[in-house]
Structure formats: C-alpha cells, structure tokens
Image (cartoon, rainbow, N blue to C red):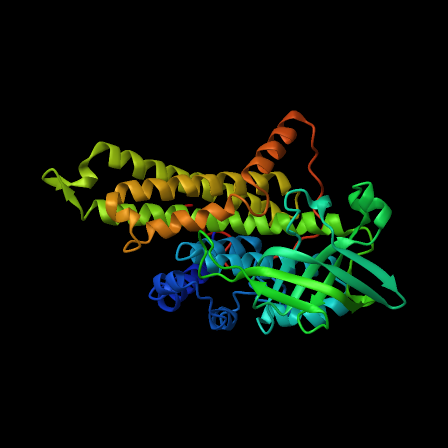
Length: 409
C-alpha cells in the first residue's frame, strides 16, 4: 500500500519556500527575464534557508530531509520561475546526491559539505555540442599520468556554468571502448573552476529560462588528482544515469509547479475578465481548459510523489521517475498553452506570466531525457524489454514528525 503522508515538517517547508519565492523572486522575475539576468545572490538566500542541501544528511551539511521534501521545494520554486528549480536540479539532484551516493568520504568532506551548506555551487557536465541523448557519442577524454588525470573536452547547455564552483565531468578513459561505443569505457571526475585550463561561457538568446544561467565549459589539459575520480574507472555511464534519475525527479516536481501556476493564473483571470456580458469563468470552454489543468496537476503530482515515496523506501524508482518526468513536462506545456488561451490576447503579452510559463516549460521536455526517450523507455518496460534496476543507495531513514497525520494530496 502506498502511503503518501505529508507532515508538519513538510507543511512548514512548503510555507517557507512559498514565502521566499513570493518575496525574493516574484516581484523581480519579469525584469530578470526581460534582461536575461541571473543573480547569484538568490542562491545565497536559498542556502540560508538550507534549501540547497534540503535532502542531504545533516552529517554532510544538509538539512536531513527526505526526497518528498526535495520535490516539494522544486514544485514551489518552479511555480514562480523555472530558473530557481533548475538550480535545485543541477546542484542538488544531479551533483550533490551523486556525490553522496558514489563519492568517497574524502570527496564528501571536501565537496559535498560546502555544497550542501550552499557555500559552493555545483553542476553536471554530460551534454556536448555533438552528443545529447546519444551519451556514448561524447568526445571528452581523460588520460592517466601518474597520480593525475589529464582532462580534455567541451560541455554544452550546462545550467549554472557561469556560477558553479564544482563540476561533474563525464568522459572516456578507454579509447578502444570509445571506438566501439562501449559505455563501460566512460568515467566521472570532479573538476573545480579554479583549475588551470578551465574556461566557461554563457549562452544568450534562449527561448525560455532567461533568468537562469546556462552555458558551456571547456577543459584543455586540465590536471586533476586521481582522488577526484568518482567511483571507479569505467563506472561513468552508470553514475551519469543515476544522476539523471535524481534530476528527472526534480524536473517532474518542478513541472507540476508550472501546471499549478498556469491553473491558478487562469482561475484568477477567468474570475476577473468579462466578455459577452459575463465573466469568462461562466463560459463552458474556459471551464474545460481549467478542468483539464486541474486534472493534469493532480495526476502529475501523484506521479512524482509516488517516485519520491519509492526513493524514500530505497526501492527501484527509475520507471516511476521516468513516467513522472515524461507526463509532468508534457502536461505542463499543455497547461501553459491553455492558460494563454484563457487569457486571450493578454496571454500573448508579458504583462501576464503565462507566456513565460510556456517559454520556460519547453526546455524540460528536452533535458534529463527527451519526451521521445522517455516514451521509448516506458514502452520497453511495459514490453518486458527493459528491467528495473535496484536502487544504488537511499538517504538515511527519515521519520515524519507526525506519522499519523495525513494531508489530502
């Protein structure tokens, strides 16, 4: 039996994040979006609330909450703007949770602790100019020289590329396996911005998430100590896929926030705008759109909550996470589009936030596995062509403050 319980701790966390986003972001996000401005200080304020390490154990500098808490934070942040949730995805989901699961104790103390505290920002480098969904099409390399590795390559479409202090870098350590497209020849390394040979840049002119920093970074003969190898040589692909599952979870929860924001904006506008002598809330086809948004929100939320519940139990969650990410992102695009239609011509203007919701949500259908990739994955699971993999590691047992209190979801 699935028990999806929200506790007093969860409720308090939601209220904290909601108040933060409304106070620190909502009044300024239109301007930031127009000017394509990213503000690092917003992450410092998130860190002050322990949001950047919300689900990292306290022994490593985090708040010690569970996966459901991570999802709740992402939903609340993206209900205001996607750029905030993206930071949670790459810093916490893709990087910090990966270090917690695969890193050595030395790596956790050196990198995970300051990241969980928000003293350093981190991101994830897998995509390249010529390799996205085709991970083994990557060209980045690392060669061993004594107690060091020499890294070369370029990563593209990297969130927080201009702000991050630490990067996970995926590359080939076995040239023969690269030629054979055998992913067991890939490895993962921790790279620091201050290392000689590291450069980065910012991408401008994006369709959406304009208030978020997105860019690229390049490594030219960057030398890292062997202690910066995450896992073992040849485990890079497995580590990358683990990281992506955590990222997909945050994306699913965040996309659910877009659906909710689209619904809420549409409800407010429908109860205010009048046509043909009555409020448009009384028009049946407007009601239909709002009803569809309501259904999309409830279904998407239940899907990511189920994935979080499985993660909390340490159960295999790849299939549930993939389904949640796929459905929530697709439905967020539909909800934002319907919201624009409810707003009519006004929805086509940035005087209202719904046009930003539509621009922002499109990216989530692409990153952390495209809509097409997840469609194929779900089909393969249903057909028995793909097997669910056991969980690598779960967070420490987390006990709700009041296990008998159930909140309607």
